[in-house]
Length: 529
Figure 1 (cartoon, one colour):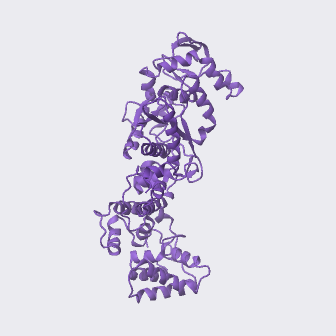
Figure 2 (cartoon, rainbow, N blue to C red):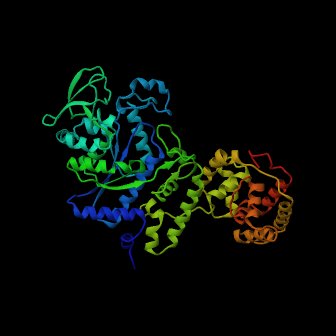
């Protein structure tokens, strides 16, 4: 029988495709490990796109661990020596930061008052986010990297090969920008600001740069020891050369710069890594998520409503397709994740298991799903039950699945808690009920009567059959019947498989709900039904 490792060698799942590329690279090089890198610009609070980059990189790393025998490492590099070019909108007391513009982020005071600098604060947030998901990574601060001397050899080489590096950069710049551009950004010895000034002279032999500051004073500084930093594009390629990076993924907005990054890396004596370009994350309006403006979802916001694994699952899906990251995607992601858990354990074929997203979410150690009720069904249950906490939902869940409990079904218990929060925050304010039409009223009356006289099993399929029979001769197409059920009874345009909803909520309770809807008690009452 085919082993999982054999299946991985031919699987079309994108982490395995990337892992096979890396395995070929590793076999051609005399290295004792494969180094993955992910970069982070801490100019604002970390956002969910940062998590996505690390999660996807980790999926490839774990895929390589399965098919290869070479050790792997992941470095998360924070460009915290970058000058603060604008004050973020989503921090306390933004005006207090204005006097620190252009200073390295690790020299800017922390507006939250919890860390020694704004850069340190954002780095701590990033690490906390990554630790929440159990990522195995090494954190590297650009400030420490420059100031400790770890970057000195590459910086000296950059001074020696300055003209070659400038030639790469100048081809990508407009004429006016070329006149003042330098790959080196000196850090002013007195003001501590990162200066965007032209170089009067770069001495490759001495490893120094000479420039005039904004006041016209001339300075000469060594390129080593954190006295200068590289512009961000040269810095990208220089890091690859300094660390000997084998793999880095980045967003589509970087794709046009790939030849620049590669050229910088080669000129500095390195070999460019394998690349993977992913599409960008968008907010509800289709705008790119920005860490400085704070639009889109944050990791903490996702975790308010759903478990971490559902977010990892969302990140796995079609990384080369743009994704809208807003609250509406959460219920679908939760239910699809649990569907894939069940499919993984139902499949004995290693090829199918290797292609299943949850294999990559869990690095092969895939748990069983205990979600006997889908998340979207829990939302509808929260609606009709007027649930204010998860205990209200558990009364219905236990009747539907007597063996279920918060202790035996921790995933379901977490989902019930998240569903109540999600319902109250997003579904409840948007619910709009309507009265039924005469044709719908006749169908609802028959459904109510059949439910009141029901003596069959409280079974999803049996009850779905009743719902279908009532609507079959009255509605064409049938979706008009189900839309009526959702709009009249649930205050929504879409909803669950209605037989399953009846089984969960209760046959008698659903009949009572129909009576309340036809009496007009639900119309205009979006807060509770």
